[in-house]
View (cartoon, protein in one colour):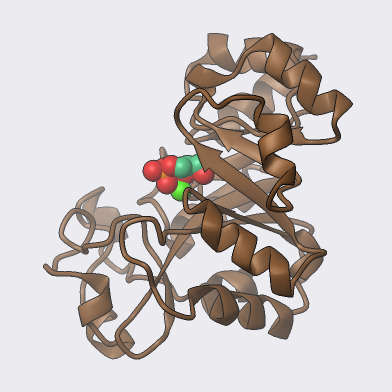
Length: 242
Ligand code: G3P
Ligand code: CA
């Protein structure tokens, strides 16, 4: 089995995270997939951005939940990274789905609903993905496992993945309690035993966020299903050498 390359927030070492530019770079770099973070605006639009507030990555300030999509789109979303990306604005999920249409990209959509409990986020994301017919390419992940359990109730065939950053007791058993077919742990809590058990129980393992070549090599040798990285180019190069 070949480990897949998932570009974390797009090719976020090359272009500002969670922008169309970062996703386009990921595609150019031949990543197998992209990871993106989503929130809900005041008027119910799904936007692609990491933090609950826009302060760190845009020229604006405040909570995403307090802005309409039209207001959010007025802020620059790439100058913090480089002037070269001054044209980037906060993408909508629709724009990313459009970009992924007619590709075989795996789309790992992370519901960022572990701090703000956006009402209706699960349904809105599901309907948008289905509108583009991309449900077979999508993996929904979240640190909010109740949200995943909820989504699993009305879309039992969708791929869902539990994000976590602490050691869990038998995570391969835990995943099945709410219909997750994959685990997305921080790489520091992944052990060989855990990978073996997941393999035996049919649970995929995709650790995040692995940016050091030595760690990439170790996890490729351990045959994890995918690696989530800010440097998809390096991981791709390493896999080509194998
Ligand atoms: O999906 C893995 C990773 O993106 C989770 O952490 O903070 O980068 O969204 P974060
Ligand atoms: Ca994320």
